[in-house]
Amino acid sequence: MKQNIIERINERPLIFDGAMGTTIYSKGIFINTCFDELNITNPELIKEIHSEYIDAGSEVILTNTFGANKIKLRKYGLDSKVKEINEAGVKIAQSVAGKNIYVLGSIGSRINIGSVLTSENKDEIIESYEEQIKALKESGVDGVMFETYFDINELLLAAEIAKKYNLPVIVSLTLKKEMETPTGLDIKIAMKKLDESEYIDVLGLNCSVGPHAMLSAVQKVINVIKKPLVIQPNASALKKVEGRTIYMNTPEYFTSYAKKYIELGVKGVGGCCGTDKSHIEDMAKAVKAITSVKKNIELIPFQKSEEWNIKVTPTEEKSNFAKKLFSKEKATTVEITPPRSINLEDVIKKVNKCKEAGIDAINLPDGPRASSRISPLVTALMIEKQTGMETILHYCCRDRNLIGMQSDLLGGYAGGLKNYLIVTGDPPKLGNYPDATAVFDVDSVGLTGVVNNLNHGVDIAGNIINPPTSILIGVGANPCALDIQKELKHLHNKISAGAEFVITQPVFDYDSLLKFIDNADTNIPFVAGIWPLVSLKNALFLKTEVPGVVVPDSVIDRMAEAKTKEDGIKIGLEIAIEMRDKIAPYVQGYQVSAPFGKVELAIDVLS
Image 1 (spheres, rainbow, N blue to C red):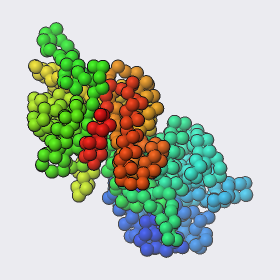
Image 2 (cartoon, rainbow, N blue to C red):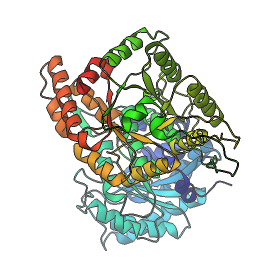
Image 3 (cartoon, rainbow, N blue to C red):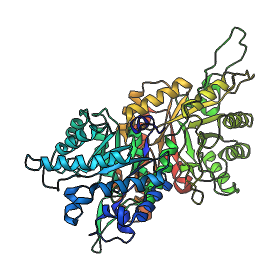
Image 4 (tube, one colour):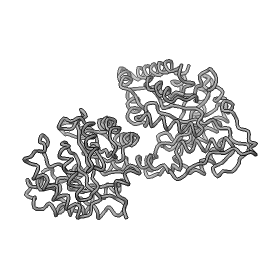
C-alpha cells in the first residue's frame, strides 16, 4: 500500500512535475483551446506529458484538471462535463503512475485576477468546488493541490471543502516580485495564516516569479510556518525578445536554485510556467543525490580500553602543514585542479612554482563540481613524490562505499599523504554520462569519524590497527550559507567527530566570515578560501552556478568596471588582496584558488 503523501513528504523532499500548460502549447495545441478538455479529446497527448515527467524523475504528477470546474468550463460550453473531464484526467495520470508515483488532483481558482471572494459569488464557488473535488476523490487521487491562488480567503474555503472528503490538502499561493500576493497581502502574513488552518496539510508557492525571486520568498516564510513547504517557480522571469515573451534561463540555472530551496528546508520542488521535462530531469538528479545520504550506517566512536597501548600523534605534529597552522605564521595553500588527462607534467610545473614562492601545501579538489578527472589521490601521491610539496587531499563521500573509502584512506596515508579535507561532495554531473549515480554511504560528519577512529587505532569494524594513522583532519564550511544556524550545527558535528581544522568556501563578504567565525566559537584553526576573480563573467558564474559561493553585488559592480581582460584580472587581484588583509587577524591561513589554472595569480595574492 502506498504511503500517505503527507507522511512521505516529511521524510524526504519530493520531486514534483513541471508545467502542464506550457508543455501542451509546445506540442502544437493552440492557446485558445480548452486544455482540460484534452483529457477526453486527446488523452494520448496528456498521457505522453505525464510519462515524460515521470521518466525525468518526478515523484508527484498533477492531473490536467486545473480549470476543470463549471465556472471556468462554461465559456467553452463544457460546464456539463465536469465529472467526465476530471475522471478522465485522473485515469490518464494513474495509467502511467504505477504504484510509486503520487497523483494529485490539480485545482485552480474560480476567481479572476482582480476579483475576490464575496457573498454574491460564494455559493456558486462552493458548489463548483464540491462538484470537482468529489469527482477527483471518487476517481482515487492521492490528494489535491490548489495551485496558483492569489486570494487566501478563497483558498481557505477550498481547503475546508476538500477536507470533508478526507483528502490530503496542499495549497499554493502565487506572488509578485514585491513579495506580496496579487491582492497586496504580505506573503509572510498570508502563509502564516494558511499555516494556522486545520484543513491544510502542506503549503506551497508557485508561478509568477522565477527561481531567484522565489528564493527571497522562501527565506521570508520558511521560519514562520510549521507545515511542509513546496516550491514551484517559473523557469525564469519573463523577457521580451524581438516581440516574443519567453523564458530565458537554463535547466542548470533552475536546478541551482532548487538545491538552495532544499538547503533551507523546503520539502518539495517542481516547476511552473516555462518549465518542461529537461528542467525536472536536471533538478531531480541533483536533489535526489543530495537528499539520499544514507542514515543506516552509524559509526561507533573508539573506546579506550585498559590494555590500550596505541600511541596517538598530537595534531600539531601530524605534518608540516599542521605545524604551520598552529604556529604564529599564516599557513598558505594553493588549489590546483587535477587534469582531465593522464599527463601530470603541467601540474608538476605549477606545483614547483608554488614551492619556489614558499607556499606550504597544494590543495587538490576531489572531482570539482562532480566532473571526471584523474584521481586526485594519485595526483597527490605524484606531487609529493616528484616535488616534495605536501598536499591537502579533498576526499568526498560521493563515489565510494564505506569499505572503499577506508581502503583509500589507509593506502593514501601509507603512501605519505598526511593532510585530508573531508567533504560530502557534489552530486555527479558527467556530461555524456548523466545517469552516473552517487553512493553517499555517509556524509562528511560520518567520514570524519572514520578518520578519527583510524587515528586512534580502530577501523570501521572495530578492529585494532597499530600503529594508527596520523591524518590531519580538515573539513569545509560555508560562512555565507543560506541557513547559518544549520551550517554552524553541521560544523560543530564535524568538530565533535574529530575535525582539526576548517577550510571555508571562497569568501567575498568580510562581515559574513567574521560573524561566522565568532558564532562558531571554536579553537580549531580556520583557513579562509580566497578566489582571485579574472572577469565579470567569472564572477557571475561563481555567483549563479557554484554551490555554496556567494558573490555580493558590490563585487559584481567592481568587476563590471573592467574595460579589458587585463583590467578584470587587476581588479580581481585587488579584491582578493583586500580580503586577505582584512581577515588576517581572524584566520590561521589562506587557501587561494588558481582560476583557470593561473597559479601565478594565487601566488600574487599570497606574496
